[in-house]
Length: 418
Ligand SMILES: Cc1cc2nc3c(=O)[nH]c(=O)nc-3n(C[C@H](O)[C@H](O)[C@H](O)COP(=O)(O)OP(=O)(O)OC[C@H]3O[C@@H](n4cnc5c(N)ncnc54)[C@H](O)[C@@H]3O)c2cc1C
Image (cartoon, rainbow, N blue to C red):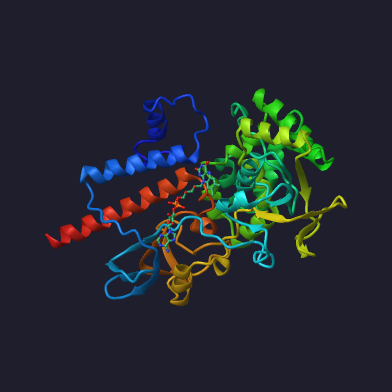
C-alpha cells in the first residue's frame, strides 16, 4: 500500500523486487525514503513538470491579488497563485506542564540521553513502540509504558481470513440513509463480534493484560497471529477502504466522541505491528524490563523526578519521561510560526476534531465554512476532516485527486485563452 501514485499501485513492491529485497516484509523507513527519493528524481529528470525547489522554512504567507506571497525564515520571497500546504504531522505536546523539566524527551534524536534505570514512556501506539525499540537496544532500562486507558500494542496477523458478514459499508449506508451514527457503527461491530466463535481475540487478550501479565498478553496474540486467527483485527482492517467515508458521514459530535472514547483502542487494535516486533516486546516483558500500566491520572514532577500513579496502586518514579503519544493535533497547541501566522490572518481555522478545517472533497482550507481562495492542505494536518491521514496510501490518493482537479481547471483556463 506504499505506492506513490494511483496508476502504479504496486510500485513500491516492484521497486523492492528490483533491489533484490522482495522477501523483506517490513522494510524500514530509510529504505522507503530511498524509494521516494528515486521516484521523485525520475519525475524531475523526465522534464514532464517544471519544478523549482526552494529549501527554506516558510514562515509567513500574505494574501495578494492574485494569489499569495510566501516569505521564508531567511527572508526569501516567492509568489504563487495557489498554495498546497503539505506540512506533515506537526503536533504539540500532551505534557505542557512537564515539557520544560530536565529528562523530558519528545524526539528520537534525544533518546541517547536516556540513562539506565526506570523510564516512563507515554502512549500505546506506533510511536510508543518506536520509543520502546530505541530504548530496548541497550537492554539496561526498565521501561514503563503507560496510557490513560492502558492499552498495549497488538500483533499483525499472518493473514486476514475472517470476512465480516454484518459490518460493511453497504449495510451501514442502507440502514442510515447517508448519515451514519457512531452508535450504529458500534452496534454493528458488536453484532459482528458476536458471530465469532469466542467473541474474537480482544476480550481474552485484554483480560490477560488487566491481570498485569504483559508477556502472556503478547504471547497469546503471537500464537493466534501464527494461526492467522485474529478475527477482531480482520474486522477492523476490513473498514480500511471506507473508514474515511464513514468519518465524513458522521456528525461532528459523534467524531469528537469517537476520538475521546474509542481513539486509543482503535489505534491499538486497528494498527497492529509485525510479529517480530511483538516478539521483542514479549521478551522484554518476560525479563521484567517492560511493564504496561494504566495511569490513574497524568504524571507529575516531584523532587527532581517524574511520578506516575497507576490504577493498580503502584507509584513509578523515573528520571526520564518520553512522550510516545504522537502528540496532539490541536492547532492552538502546535508550535509552528507558519500555522500561527495563517491562523492570525484567518487563512486557516482549527477543525473541531483537530488539525486544519478543509473541504473533504477539494482539500481547500475553509474559515467559517467559506473556502479560502487558492489555499489547500494535504496530509496528517487534515486528520480531523479526513480521518485516515496517517496512512501513506490515503495521503497519496488525496494528492492525486487534487492534482487531477487542478489539471482540469488549468485545461479549462487554457482553452478559454485559445
Ligand atoms: C512513527 C510513524 C510511523 C509511520 N508508519 C507508517 C506506515 O508504516 N505506513 C504508512 O502508510 N504511514 C506511516 N506513517 C505516516 C506517514 O509517515 C505519513 O502519512 C506521511 O509521511 C505523510 O507525508 P507528508 O508528505 O504529508 O508529510 P511529511 O512526510 O511529514 O513531510 C512534511 C514536510 O513538510 C516540511 N515542513 C513543515 N513545516 C514547514 C514549513 N513551515 N516550511 C517548509 N517546510 C515545512 C517538513 O519539514 C517535512 O519535510 C507513520 C508516521 C509516523 C510518525
